[in-house]
Image (cartoon, one colour):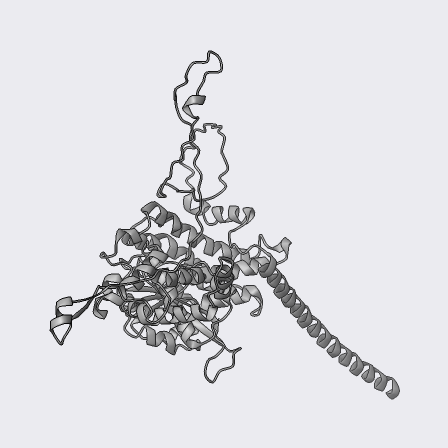
Amino acid sequence: MENVIRELEELKTKYEESETERRKLEEKNSELAKLVAYYEECFGLNRHREFGQSSEKADADSQQTLLIFDEAENEADVKKPEPALDEITYTRHRRTGTKEDNLDSLPVDKVLHSIPEEERICPECGGPMHVMGHETRRELTIIPAQVKIVEHEREVYSCRSCERENIKVPVIKAPMPEPAIKGSAASAAAIAHIMVQKYMNAVPLYRQEMSFLNDGFFLSRQTMANWLIHASLDWLEPLYGQMRQSLLKEEILHADETVLQVLKEPGRSSRRESFMWLYRTGRYTERPAVLYEYQETRSSANPRKFLEDFKGYLHTDGYSGYRMLQKDIRLCGCWAHARRKFHEAVQAAPPEEKINSLSQKGLEFCGRLFALEHEYEQMSPEERHKKRIEQSKPVSDAFFAWASSACVLPKSALGKAIHYALEQRQYLETFYADGRIEISNNRAERSIKPFVIGRKNWLFCCTPKGAKASSIIYSIIETAKENGLKPFEYLKYIFETMPNIPKDSCNILLPWSKDLPDSLRLEQNNFDTAQ
């Protein structure tokens, strides 16, 4: 009997051990399944980023869901009679683009094609023929840039009488404008052309060197780099300083930053990342300005120093460094960043789970807010502020209530999206404080895009001095574009004018100055199209 009891106890012990081992294996299997799902999500998201469509526009199914989202309860009125329906049939031509070509501002050269008078014989009766009308065909022709040397020669005058009779002979020289760079062959037009090619058209200096070689002469990239640095530090930096002073007087600004590689930074490896910071004015300003600043690090000390005299609202992304700014600066979060994270979570989900997933629900909330903002686009700031409190605030409150109650894996794409939204809530809700505040920081992202596109072509800066010059040149060009100026003509005018006026008079050359000649400005239609 004792042997049987002992065997039963041993069997019970083994059973308990096996059950414990089974539970451990089940837990491990569950953890591995979650890990595999996480890696599959990351893999799918990376493939979408590399090969998929970058647009965040909703597809047809989700767009339909967005249109009916929270609409039935708000808009339904069972007592209201249904309207009569009229069937309308029409043909719709598909547009191939969103902007139409506008060539009306271009000069026109007329070329007349005629038949010699002695050949104007009627083939029927042999009588003379007269001009009864004209047929016209318009063509856009492009004349390639011409490169030539301009020799500035001035006459020197002396007095013949003094040469014969006096010991002192006066010498008078004809006036001649000062060059942009003394002792150099650089003209204002050449410097402006090289700047526009590199910083606006993203053509690196080595490609410009090859282009000049194909035109029949050699101009080294080192020479061009020296011209750019000298011209930016001598003439553009004073304008940059005044533009910064004007920008800091605004009440609403946008900020962003992106990486930059500088090869020869003292005490730093060539592979270390530096940063290009961007600060720009908001929508409601009379002096649009876009300023770049090169810094070695992403430290919060950089925006704190740049914005030390600023008081107001600052649009940013979710970077925590902006939270260390002065108390007089109130941060505005970016709903576009929040929406993007939910969009990524939707793309990472399996196809069969996308439409009714929690990720799609979060994306619909964000989409509803942006749809309402589109309705407020043409309103005054006061009207927009009122509408936001009445219509948008309930949507965001419902969104945050839903996000707080959602049960998701923290490391999943959806978990990261919800965590970002909840962490940024106080900043995301700042746009309810003032109708001039925008729902996103897309204005700054659009302004930093030209630098990012250029970086893909020229890849890096050699020296900190070159990086600083690049930040100044980008600032001048992008601010000129914001103010409706022709970048090449504006830069050329600066380099022709600044060497010949007092340094304290350079405010007349600021991009919003009323003293600038009209020849520097784009036609209003062309400016609206560019915008």
